[in-house]
Amino acid sequence: MRFGDVMLQRRVPCVMRDGVTLYADIYLPEETGEYPVLLMRQPYGRKIASTVSHAHPVWYAKQGYMVVVQDVRGRGDSEGEFIPFVHEAEDGYDTIEWAAKLPNANGKVGMYGFSYQGIAQWAAATLAPPSLVTIIPSMTAADIHRWAYPYGSFSSGMLTWAFQLARDSARRAGDVSAEQACTQIMNNPDGIVRHLPLNDRHPILEKYCPAYFDWVNHPEYDDYWAGLNWLPAFQASPIPTFHIGGWYDFLLDGTVQSYLALQDQSRTPDLFHRLEIGPWVHIPWGQKAGGLDHGPDADGDMHRKQVRWFDYWLKGERTNGLYEEPPIRYFDLSSRAWLEADTFPAETTGRKYYLTGGDNPANGTLGGGLLTPHHTKLHPQRTPDVYVYDARLPMALPGYAPLDRSAIQDRTEILVYTSEPLADSLLIFGSPKLCVAVQSMDGPTDVVAMLSLVKPGGQALFLSVGRAEIGTDPDADGWQHAEIQLRPIGLTFPPGTALRLELTGSAFPTLIRHPNSVGMNLAHTVDDSRLDIAVVAVASQPGLVSYLQLPAVNATSG
Image 1: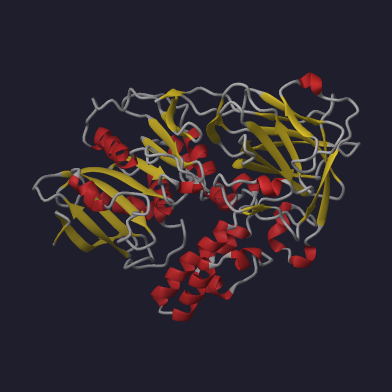
Image 2: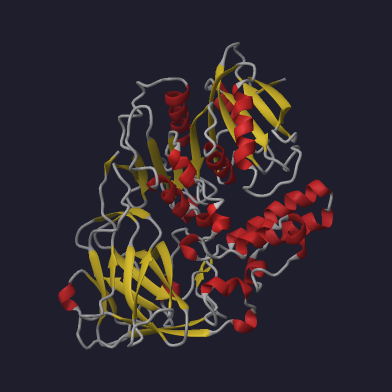
């Protein structure tokens, strides 16, 4: 049939090696000829085709590509049982080689798509299908443990996503009541993410998404997660990869991890990688994603950039300038300009700001907490600052968008350290690191660090977060040094703005709360009765120094 001025073949069967049939829609240019294939494999219904972030397949077909969008095993029309992640390597391999031999295909295949569709790319590429030339995994992670446990803490989003997957499985089974229940939970997730224990055997998940219990019951990186880490196999047999991430996306940590694993490989015209990070949440990739107006250039022209990447690798357009460009491009959240860089800093080096203060404790924004670049301003006899974290009333972080945290920072059960207004602009690109001397009163708990940009009018826009568990290995005096790698950021602090660091015990519900009664490795097993109170002291004085280190900057306008 003809649709949108291209040819469309619907429900085209593809038989896997075990006899299971998967179904795809194929979009093809009207002109007779042979075309490279763009393949997307996804679990949400192939008609959607990642159009929440990507151009519709009709557009890609008009650029001279055959576009194949397939329902993965057990989803949409495809046969078999859907087990998240498990079948995507072998099914992806079989689909790639099938697609390369379709009528009108020229034998070269590229894969694209975001989130789970990105996982399907990483998984298939690990088996090195001969016809797969390149991939563009967007807003995703090649190491699934980073997806489920960013910064070592279980992501509450895994629970709501499990209900999304369960909803579609319930629909396939004709279970209307379960489908409706899942929809209600997805529309109002607050109750379910607060419910404890996290591994409670919810009957809908037991029936329609039992994989959730594997995720939540494996809090530490073990053999289960090693089997879902596609990076080692991919590194052994790499292909050109274009990584796309968002500063506000919950999977940014995994996107950056995947790129860092590849960035030191020799760069040649026949093998190189790209990373682009825009001012976006997971959905959408728009001008006002994250609640701020990022200007008309915020989309980064990503549709055409992806086609240009495919043109280079699949059509042989080696003179389109792609190889000559710097490998990294990112959006400066302050200047609203796209910048370029040669490397993503793997280690945090650069300017240090020391935690200090005056006579008043550092509790709340009206307290005495200061960030200073001068080591000499540390006071030898300064009293340690103390915060109290009640797991029954966790400190909030609703997501990674740059929301104003100034009202929360007024609360005196958290510690707040603010720098003097900057005299000159300060460009940051990479992952800030906090090294902090801490002491917990009773057993294990979390130290959560949040960084924000303070505007002259008092707004404190959230930028980054990280956490570390403490209280497990103190020295003889009860102190220990915690090192916290914060979430990557890229922006210019304009003159007159300031840096602000919060220290508290939680970032809920974005990260699960530490219960304080047990270690984080058992947090998924506790109910409300085990939520306890933690008291944490923070010191910063000669011999017991605490400091925030900002990442090195290596960028030019682009």
